[in-house]
Length: 287
Ligand code: C2E
Ligand code: CA
Ligand code: CA
Ligand code: CA
Image 1: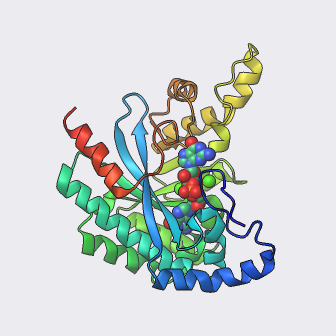
Image 2 (image 1 turned 180 degrees about the vertical axis):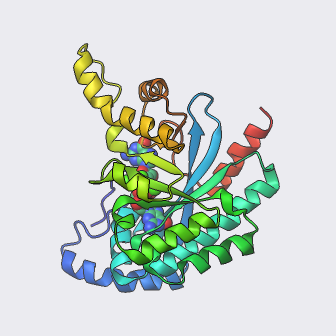
């Protein structure tokens, strides 16, 4: 019943014949998996497009299921959010990422890596202990606050008072907030004025096809319009930008021409273990 998904992941419920049952069991499976230590964090490099140099990493969680293999977060994050298990799971990712980033800085020096980011769900931002959890993870690891990036989506930001209070508090602590999947929401532009963002991450959907040259400049312009608008806005507001989901050198070229300095994507580097990042940092240290 196992099926290999797109990125080599095993799809969770598909082909199991009893999707509803599988769905119901997912909650208790996740609880068991947390107790059983089955979650691992991988890190995808964020690189300078001009030089290929590693600037930062994004932490991404993986579930190493004993029978099903590596399960993609797309398969279990929604259930973790529904059940509230995203709170302990997110805390695990937070602590592990801070610990690991502090180790990289200790091993390779303060210039080796500017920042480490991780994804935060609306549910976590609603948790009254979230800001304290972040402060604790930073204090315990010794990672300087300004080295941590918390990635939130527009829809999360738009969801309520408690969330915006948490975001302003995190910003005051010097933690950098990134608007993830930028451009996909309904009020991206007005949101930026109200939200203490430091970074916008241009969504993959605006990178897909950006390089297509069919000899029709009008069509090419239309495909590049959002990427261009986002970088202009980011410049006006002094925000950093990261272009996501870069899969080809042609996309790198177009994005650089538009003014994007930083990028992330399979063409640049896939998510990898902490050891993989250490090897990249070691190689970078001697070049
Ligand atoms: P995201 O935050 O937008 O993360 C980027 C996703 O795009 C990752 O998928 C990454 O592996 C994938 N990706 C990177 N470069 C490319 C590319 O060139 N092409 C394509 N097709 N994909 C690329 P992943 O790791 O499967 O994560 C999916 C989503 O799950 C994330 O999207 C994020 O929303 C969520 N997620 C992952 N880890 C966590 C976590 O620790 N906490 C929370 N709350 N959500 C998480
Ligand atoms: Ca993200
Ligand atoms: Ca994203
Ligand atoms: Ca996404």
